[in-house]
Every structure is written in C-alpha cells, then in structure tokens.
Length: 138
Image (tube, rainbow, N blue to C red):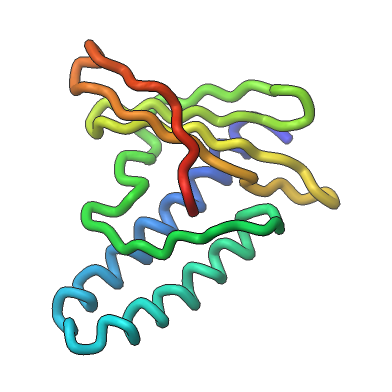
C-alpha cells in the first residue's frame, strides 16, 4: 500500500470519529435526562466505525464524547510522516494548531489495512515542550 493510502485511512477514521462526536455532543448537552440513552446510541455507531477501521482484538473501548472532538486537528493540513516498523506501518500526525500529536500503528490482516493502536503526546504551542508518547484508548 502506498503511503498516501495509509494517511487516507487515518484521515477517514479520524474524520468519522470527529463527525460522530460533533453530532452526539449537542445531544448529550440538550438531553441530560437521557444521558444513558445518548451514550448507548453513540456506542452503537462508534462500534460500527471500530469494526470498519480497527483490527479485531480484545480492547477496552472508551466511549467518551468530547468537544472539541478527540482527533481535532487531524486534517489534510497536518504534517504526516509514514515509516515501516517491522511488519507494521506507523503514520505520525504532527499538528501545530492543537497541542496534541498522534501516532497510528497500521497492520495488514487478510489483505485489509486496519489501525491496530494509537499513541498521543502533548506539546506546547511553539513545541518548546514536547511530552512523551502515551497509548490512547479507542
């Protein structure tokens, strides 16, 4: 698979997750009496995204709804690097407008590329301070 296709996979996943959170955050704020119902609806849709984009392995899913969306800044304007590390490819997303970067690990299973895991790190606006990478939860 070409590097641009791997980047596109990450962009598609993060856009869909951001769009999902952007839809459900206002619902959560408006309908506080039915919070459990809103989260249940969100979970069903998030599970669909996870099935399409993530490797199938046992995970502890995090079904948080955040505003701004969790993967804010992962857009075409971010700076991407792609490198092969053993049998997987790592897509790193460096974001200037937001104080968080991401590193996605992708693997090919049965001829289909999927996201296996991701890490995140925080940094100051001018990158004077850059913290270490920490595994994230889907």
